[in-house]
Amino acid sequence: MKFFTEFGSYLLTLKGMFSKPENGKMYWKEFMHQCSEIGIGALGIVAIISMFMGAVSTLQTAYQLVSPLIPLSTIAQIVRDTVILEFSPTLVCIVLAGVVGSKIASELGNMRVSEQIDALEIMGINTKSYLIMPKILAAIVVIPMLVVISAVLGIIGGRIAGTLTGILSPQAFDKGLHQYFKPYNVFFALAKAYTFAFIIASIPAFYGYNVQGGALEIGRASTRSVVVSCILVLFADYLLSALLL
Amino acid sequence: MIEVKDIKKGFGDKTVIKGVSSVFQTGKCNLIIGTSGSGKTVMMKCLVGLFEPDSGQILYDGRNFSEMNEEQRKELRQSIGMLFQGSALFDSMTVEQNVMFPLDMFTKSTPAEKQKRVDEVLDRVNLKDAHKKFPAEISGGMKKRVGIARAIVLNPKYLFCDEPNSGLDPQTSLLIDQLIKEITVEYNITTVVNTHDMNSVMEIGEHILYMYQGEKEWEGSNKEIIFSKNKLLNDFIFASEFLRDAKDMRMLEMKGKIDNNRNMDELLK
Image (cartoon, rainbow over all chains, first blue to last red; front, top):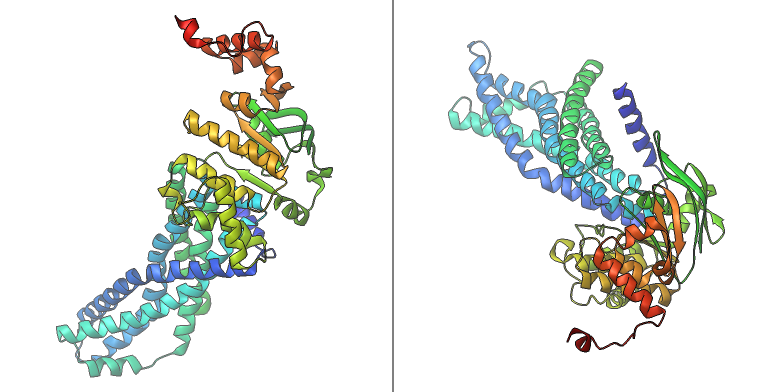
């Protein structure tokens, strides 16, 4: 029962976002601010994770491919597809659910508890629209970009690791990268990225916006939003894989 | 002028406001006082529309707030300023940006005009060197001043202050009270202050509504409060022996039985 109440409340919060902006310029400013917060703020961690993720998957794929009948370039092909199909969209978004999600939930929670949201309401501003909408839109714009950057860096990381350890030459890696490449995989990765971006921004925004109480509740809302976002990302991952692949 | 007609508000089984009626006059400081849990905060939240009353009417210069649609409410809210208990300043903005925010959102003035207006209101609340500071870098009293500046920057017709003196020392409280009073007269606005600070009651309480357990227990002015025989009110206002003595002294003064300008040095000899 609690699930349905919460889900209904989530939908109503989302519905409340759709109204005419009081001042388009201010909404645009807030949107750009959020793009910078989410995009630039998470770029460092995304880059580090992606490089290591690519490197580790090269080493582990090479470790498992022991047959001399399989050409070494296959390692690059497997790394490419794993990174594009799963690692970059899912793993990066799980990390972003923690980094971006907790930030959104605690920011809105703090605004709620310190009456900043009430102050905006009294000024005549639709707070759902002004505070939540730019965050969701910014996430939808920026997170797929981060996923693309992550995929590129993951492949570069794999190439560097393969070369440094002597598992395969850069030429063999590059050859593998071009083998049996399906552009549809990129579409699939982006479809996942857009879906996850919506989850990563809207769930923490909902929990943060509806915080009641004090500092303790902000922490709880933040943790809960990250847990729920991660579960939903994994669930959506499965659903999209079943539907689109 | 704000008229409140028989408003009721409850949460679940508990009725917090039990049919309160009053009139808050323009150009006056109207105080809502009462013990913690008496319903004054809920009452104020009903007045500004953060809570929807279960029944009754709230009339802003004759316009029924409950019957307004979302657009009309938005419009009315632009003529409402509110000072919150914790000031509710936006953490990520400087003092200047906080005050400029309503102007950015609701006016089409040029940047120079907006800056001029911000400087004007910050000067008005005696804040001259804090423009570029963040809320975390200023004192509680300064935060309240910024809150007042932000509340009046759009020339509101109605000003609401929720416990403006909480967390402030008596001297700063007095300054904030005087500022609220001056602004009320200067801008000719309807000011409603929610407080349990006795200094405020005596200093700026031109119209006082005393609430007890969700009901209106007493209504009057700071002059009438001295002579009130309402036991609940007296127990609340003059809670300590010191305040009861002060009240007796003031009554004697007002009745002319002791000299207003008595020489305390003489008396202490």
